[in-house]
Image (spheres, one colour):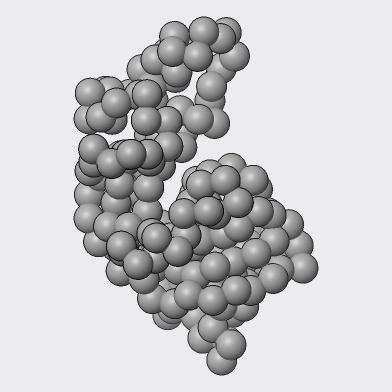
Length: 171
């Protein structure tokens, strides 16, 4: 899986996360996410704690994905705002609840590359977005980050397979 992730407002935690080899997620008032059995339970708790009737779908999805959907070996691409990439790395641990000051939901990451790349197009402002099904977008991000245009072979194969499937389906 491939994830687009922003470490705090305006990526303010990027430098410390890069040094520590982690990513973190807020919503600390939810407590340890291990206590929830479904995304719906997370959404219910968010509505209760925030005293709201809104669906809390995006917030619940971010928490559930960080806790359950994300896996060791997944790739996290770090962003700031809607057009800036800061680096990428590989998830190397399961979810952990850490008693730090903020952003207590943690995963360890082996950072592969860091820098600053500006995109022509904008992307979502959400904290955590699964972009796995957007092969062309993943491919484009890798091309931008790796000045030599290199893209991991498994992503290249997946993109080509998906394009072949589309060609077969519509021809």
